Length: 263
Image (cartoon, rainbow, N blue to C red; front, side, top):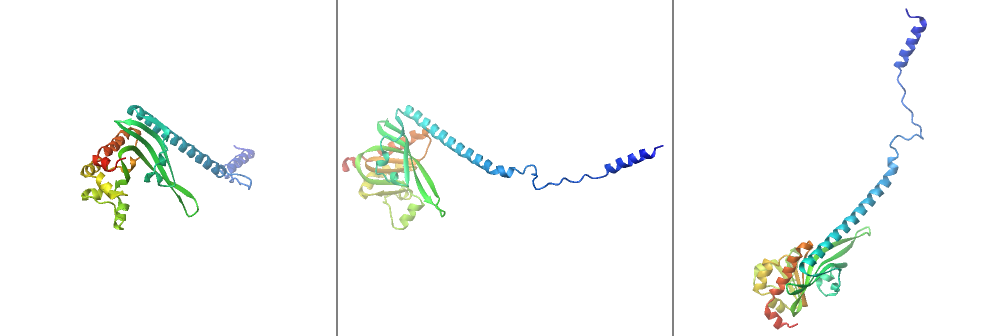
């Protein structure tokens, strides 16, 4: 039989077992686990932003280097000279394309004789700067690849480009471009020239056919004894095609142009 002392001891143990432990009380100076994450948030945002900036700079540098190496390889294949910067002062030429935007530049220049034609091919870009309602500024960039080559004539300014919605609107407002006998050509291209007769002499039926078949993806500007051919930015490996288009344009200039407009 259990003694009184044993019974009292068992009763005390049972009482302790069924008594719930009170929850902890957090005073004003006690920090719950994880509370410091809010204090670290600005640091994390700064580090993340810095990482993105460094990543962007690196990717931009790697892209430019890869493009530069592509041009160097093409220069070797085509037996042309390469210059990372513009050695000719091309932006000094009075072509309309070189006066667009608020800033512009030339880089990755290939130059020399290619298939018996002296060519200068290059990357060209310009940007337009805008200001928002809060006074902040932003830039919109436009990038092209171009070829400059000689033409055996003294040309008044002539531009040939694809028709688009803006040019059709200008036509509707009576700012008409030069019209030709081919309605198909008129719907596809807009032609402007300081001397309309020169445009008609240069753009004969053979030239129209070539432009519609081969040259529709580019813009052309003739001035003095030079022609500028411009198209969208392409990979360096595709420059052979662009050079071919530029050479094809000059080859399709009617022979009579040289005699009527001697350079």
